[in-house]
Amino acid sequence: MIKSRNVILGIDPGTLFMGYALMDATTSTPTLLVMDALKLSSKTDAYERLQKIHLTVVELIAAYKPDTFAIEAPFFGKNVQSMLKLGRAQGVAIAAAMQAGLTVTEYSPKKVKQSITGNGNADKDQVWKMLQRIMKLEEKPQYFDATDALAVALCHHYQSNSVIGKLGKGLKGWEDFIAKNPARVKAK
Image (cartoon, rainbow, N blue to C red):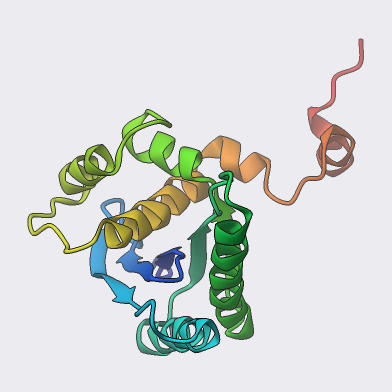
């Protein structure tokens, strides 16, 4: 039986730097296809930057034809304006993926770090060093936004292939789980 391909597009959203990475997770050892960051000028109009983010995601999808899309959720900080800008960047990237018919999955920064390093509080350099080991990478990219995007893609790969991740897909709580899995319920 031939296994279907599994290309994952990972995005680390941002209004000045948007990291992106594509990896092929068809085999048990995922391989990197591309990893980079879109650098946007702070002097450019905010809406033009959002358009560039959207166009870049559309171009990546057209070029690599990913099967799934994973994106890092905004980090909840104290600066509301920063959160709004980041949310917009995330939104246009998600819109591009949805327009292409991709399934969108969002991961918190803590979940991504936990999946890659085992420590939800790991710093960017620790995440990069673990990515180097796991995926046998040598050349460090210019921006950590790119490595963050690869971490999101790899996190998605791990979550999609875990038994726990598969059990919880699309469930809205215990009642929904019981309704969808009646054979797993034992009477007292």
